[in-house]
Image 1 (cartoon, rainbow, N blue to C red):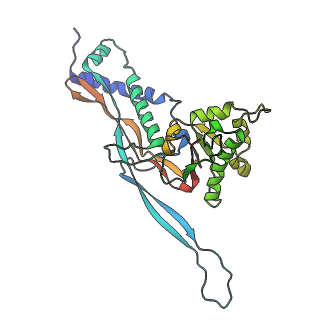
Image 2: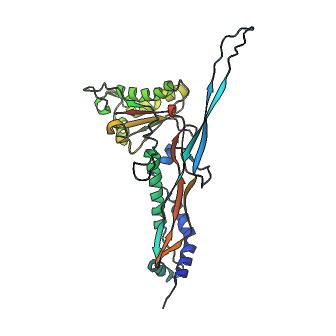
Image 3: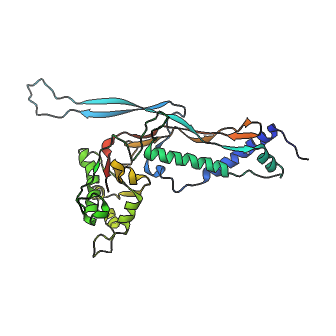
Length: 317
């Protein structure tokens, strides 16, 4: 007769977790978007309650000056401190005495990594939603926004010169669609007095499909997307390629639940996702007479847009 006590079960689970977690963390999730969209900053202390950063603005300009004058034009630097809160979230997994006992019956049996992988998947999905949309209004008391819905970013509808005075790309010609996109990109450049340049363009999935399958003109075998990659404001000025990506959630992110496109510079000086403590599993513990939990925790501050003039939203496409 095979018998075991809770201490044996816990010891067996502890011995298995290192292998389980290594396998689970190795799994890649190709549809998780945020690591490719936002620089992730893990440099803060894992237990910090907030992250402080400083922004500076240079003041002053040179003027004509007489050798007899006393009112010397002076330059200065304006420095402002900003505080960004950090909060904890959790997702773990569980086994029961029955499951552990059955696994212990056969020497050399390893527990499956499926549950740990499910926990990590839930963490990645949480971070994906947080990075893109922030925290929806709820009882959490948090009012964080994300990459695609931050109110400090300049936003406005594209030109309504489509069929029937429409802003929708479905009612516009390829020339008008290209004008809308390049207008958004150049808006970042001119709106920041030529300081900032957007190197990344995010589009709703359906809109990217449209420009990827629509010819540039009735006599062209080049699509709007192919033409855009070679002929856009960012590439024309810098010679570097423009990053163009389809992102879920943009279909209703604009004002009045309209489709939104986003232009921004993907740079940690402009935008970053604070993640002082990436997801990690802690030691298993017995949470009930026949239940053993493996807790998993992470600490994050969500997305912080440090230089909003390097961003621009275009709505109604």
